[in-house]
Amino acid sequence: MRGRFDIGIIGGGIIGMALARALAKRGAKVAVIDAGATIPAATNAAAGMLAPSFECGGATTQSLQHFSMASLAAWPTFAASLEEETGIEIDYQNNGILGVFYDDIEWSKARKTCENLRQRGSAVDVMTGEEARRIEPALSNKVIGAMHARQDGQVDPRKALIALRAGFAKTKGEAIAGRVVQVSREEGGYILETDQGDHIAASKIVLASGVAAKTALIPGLEPPPIFAVKGDAVALSIPDNLLRKVVRAPGAYLCPKAGRRLVIGASEAPYCEDLTVDQSATDGLVRNGTRAVPALRNVDVTERWAGLRPATPDGAPLLGRDPDGPEDVFLALGHYRNGVLLAPESAEVLAEELIGSGAVRSATMEAFRPDRFRQIQQARQCRV
Ligand code: GLY
Image 1 (tube, rainbow, N blue to C red):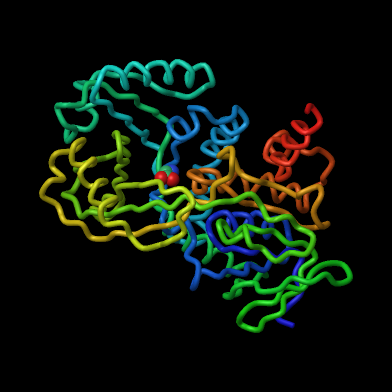
Image 2 (tube, rainbow, N blue to C red):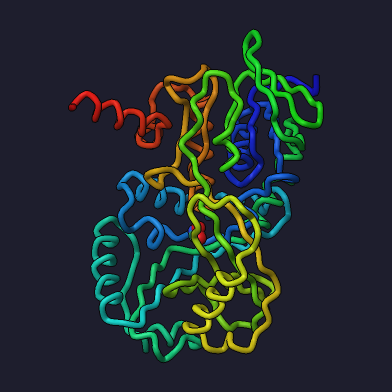
């Protein structure tokens, strides 16, 4: 037996590691079992935008918008304490995101979105192309208008994950490399067996393994309704200070990182699990990025990659226990386009659910309950 733990988290991406941190802070002994060597975390493929005004301002639920805003508000403390604890800079910035538009139709849609967002408490401004170029002089003259979300921002997700892992290494918990191949019930908990031959005992289990969770081997748990949405992305080496903030243009978002690195994302290929980089998709991103920032015409591509976003049918995460599933098995899955943004708040609400007083089930946990799709189906069947 490798060890006995209060909680075993399957999946060591940003969601699993942020949760491990929140649980360890509450005194729990946590094991994180990560198959990263064979299934790379979506976190490493993400660009790291913290963009509720753009990603969650449209057709998604109000609960997701509230949750996203709460998590955005949690990021400054989360980032500062993580950097202080580990001495690792994660390049967190809350200097705003600029959405840019080339035509009147898109621009007038953006103005409406802006009004809605303001009513929900987002700090967003609309501005002309000229005003946007005063903020980001490298923007093309073809930009006729922009939406500036003043409080949105970004972080370097790869660095954040390294810092979370370094912070976790200082707790009494253990990070275990391997893919869970069997889960069995035992008195007071579960035994997780990995493909490396480790056996880990845990009183409670959390599934935080992204797309891989759809084939989770937990007895009595229905396969979570997760599917992959592949994203290709690209990095360029840019001149110093070409851009200061994230720019979202039609067909590309541009995230300037430390070290003159510009990440441009990302394609969306639903149900595709092939991690081969799509050359034409990444070429398209560079083309769309160059349309917004013409100076990119002459810069070098330094990296191309692909990752799998774990999506759900309604675009919102699955958090908590499936009421029809086994006792003491919890889900932290399906963060789709917002895993990085939602990590701090997901970790807090789940940690409370797992080892808090449990007296009050939060509205968040209720909104994102893993059985909600089954509930809708059952309600429809009753009406027929
Ligand atoms: N959050 C941006 C993306 O998933 O591409």
